[in-house]
Image: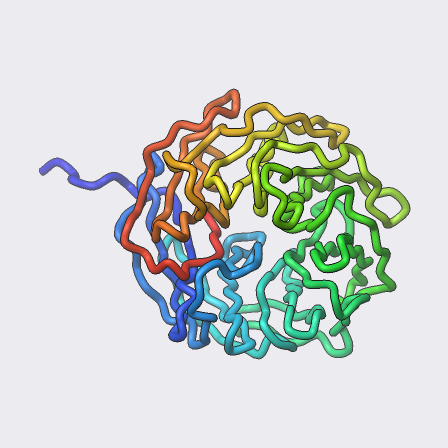
Length: 345
C-alpha cells in the first residue's frame, strides 16, 4: 500500500495565550506543510487578549530538547521535553517576577524577562525543569524600561534586553554561574527598540517600531566592542509601520522582519561586518494590508519562514529561495486570535 502521508521532518510551536493556556504543536513535512495541531496544557494562564507584546514567549532550547513557554498572567514558565513534534510536560515554575513575556537559553542557562516590575530571573535547565540561580535576579536600570525581548549573544557571555520606554538597549555581562554584572545602557539608534536577532558572529539587528509614526519603522545593527553595543547601520527605514520581530537566516545572509500594521515581511541583506541594507520592503505578505502579522521563526533546515497572523487566527509560511525570495502558500486556519510566540524546528 502506498504511504498516504509525507514523513514529518520538523515542527512549529505556538502558545494560545488563553486563560487555560496551551501549546499547539504542528508537525512539518518536507514541503513546509503543517499537519493538524496537537494541544498541550501549560498548567499556567495567558492574558486571554490578542497581541501579547513580546518576542520570545515560546522558545526552543539551543539543543532543541526542551520547549519553554512564558505564562504572562500566572507569572510562571512551563517546560516541555521535545520529541520530534511531540511534547512531554515536565514542570511549570514561578518566573521570579510578574508578567514574564520573553525567554532565552544557552548551554542550560535560562533567563526570563519579567515585565510587571522590569527585571530578569536566572535558572538552570535540566530534565527536572528549571532551578532558580540563587542571587542572580536582577532589576533593569529603569522602572520605565517597558522591556520587549531578552536574548543571549551566541559568541560571548552577554545578555541583551530591548527597552521601549527608555529607547535603550541594556547589555549585561554574564558570569559562569548565571549571575549578571553591571549593565551598560546603549541608546537605540531609533525610537521604540523592540525585537532583535543575532547573527552567528554576534552581530545584532534590532527592529524600531517608531511608536505610532505611520511608515516610519526601521532596523539598526550593532557590534560588540569592550562589552558594549556599538551601532553599525543606524535606523534604516523600510517604509512600513510597527516593525516588531526579526530573524536571521542560518547562513547569516538575510534578516526577515515582520511589519504588524501592514502584515508584510521585509528582507534586509546582512553583511559580515554587521551592516544591513534593505533589499525588499515587501518580500512577503498575507495578501492584504490589514494588521495582524507578528511572531516569526525559521525552520531548522533554513528552508521555511513561519509567522503568526494573529488577527486572522492562523499561521502562515513561505519557502525561502537561495536568493532570499519568499514563496507563499503555507497556511493553517482556525486558531485562537490570542495566539502568541512561535518556535520552529
